[in-house]
Length: 253
Ligand code: 6PG
Image (cartoon, rainbow, N blue to C red):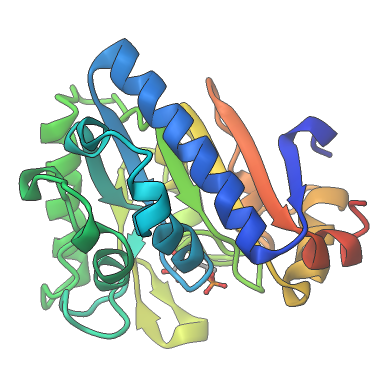
């Protein structure tokens, strides 16, 4: 079971997004001060839209130095096998809610090429991008300053789905598993990448996630059934940002 201090509960999805934004900005400023750059991994799905919109909204944008965005580098934790302008594209969602409004150099945006005919090729290409940007030697892992993740109703995170072969991957950075529940392939970073981040922020809102959350946080360890339980940064922090409807019904408050 997690330490209570790792779990931050807010009243509403909006308040959760606001607190997550504060955490993001604090970590970005610290990373830039200490290392000159901020490497962030974005999550897809619908939950982070509020966070992205909040970060790119007029009131918050005015409080963030343009230098913060100019020194930020954006990556994705997973992608659907679709072109970048497709309604299901995680890249498109982040672009339309966040990136289009910020002074981020286009050379700092590293999307997963979901449009490739073979998702395995897309995974291999993205792995090469990561190796190149982070100057990785064989056996090394990228070190993200912040990895945002969500949790699906079935306990998946990124595109690490229950009982997937991808859960056993310990050498590749990116894979393209078949997801039977979706009858589709997905392209996803592997759990050692997330676990090498300085901070993983798991954003979960809504009462419908409560039951899964209860199993994940209060139940026994069953990562094949609840892959999000594999997320345990080895030299970093794991923060859960949860809203009250999810937390209350999960028995966390
Ligand atoms: C995706 C994701 C995925 C998501 C969860 C939660 O591409 O769908 O990155 O892991 O975070 O499925 O999705 P919701 O926020 O839509 O509930």
